[in-house]
Amino acid sequence: MTIRPATAALVLFFAATLAFFSLSAPHFATATNFENLMSGFSFVAILAVGEAFPILVRGIDLSVGAIVGVVGMVVFDLTLVLHVPGYVILPVALAVGALAGALNGVLIVFLRLQPFIATLSTLAAYRGLTYSISGRQLVPGLTTTPIRDPWIVGIETYFDIGGWLGVSKFVTMPWFPLSFFIMLVVFAILQTAVLATRFGRDLYTVGGNYEAARLAGINTTRVIISAYAIAGFCAAITALIMVARFTTSTEALGTGMELTAIAAAVIGGVSLAGGIGSMFGPVVGAFLLGAVLLGLTLQGVPQFVQQIITGVILLAAVGYDRLLALRRQRRLALSLAEAT
Image (tube, rainbow, N blue to C red; front, side, top):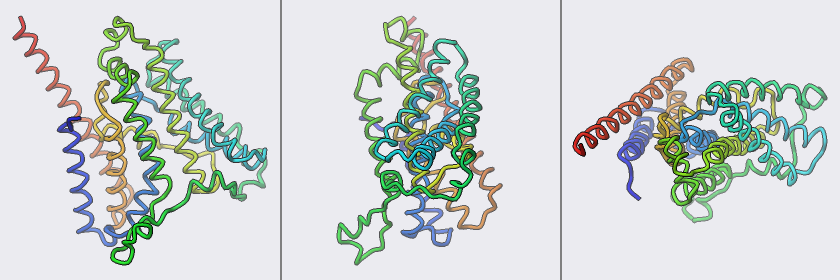
């Protein structure tokens, strides 16, 4: 598999960012900080990987943060209000997320709504649904009750890989959170799906040229709904990790996360024009954002400045994506001119 220049540039930029903050920010290059980076941004990477699928089919999903909130509250209610065992809650939570995502696809395909409008509407609807089913409102006494089900809180487990490998005597290594390995599994499965399956080929074809894909006999309805269902499924995994980390869920869980996921996906080279990108880019994009935010925090940079810098990085990524799109158009026009 050839590495795209944009992907190579992203990896080099990420390495340069790590090197810069390791030299300039106190305590950045420590085991504890890298542990914080993995635990704090693995679920962001999962959400960004899911967000990449609607973008690949030339859409967008603004509701993933709200789906995180709905799934988190479903877990809260089933655990603390209905006392359902965790091994039942896990598949139910994943199904709720996938169905919420699939509903976005249905609205886009069958009602012919613009993805922006459809998912903006469901963002509001899902956020309202979270409040309406909130066990914290129905049973106020549960507000301070932590979730203790081992199937749920067990997701927030850490592994001493350095100890297992016997290198802890020589170097201090971070403990690896289970969420990091979940992210790797999600990445591996979805990367394989887009690169080595018919669904992946159809996904890129639909995103690259919808009309050509339809005329070629590709089931565009199935592809688009599946893309949004995968985004919802990844949002559900994100919700489970966050609930395990906080041992509770609130009505505001996931608020604003859709913007971070979109930013990570676009920074990772998933083109807003559709049909271009991989799962590797959003993962690197998420950890790049994490490294920048942690590094700036350790340097004492105020939060509003961090938001400005994040916005500048996103603008640069969108500008670069647009530049690449214009270059592709020029090359295509040149090829057509030469052919005639």
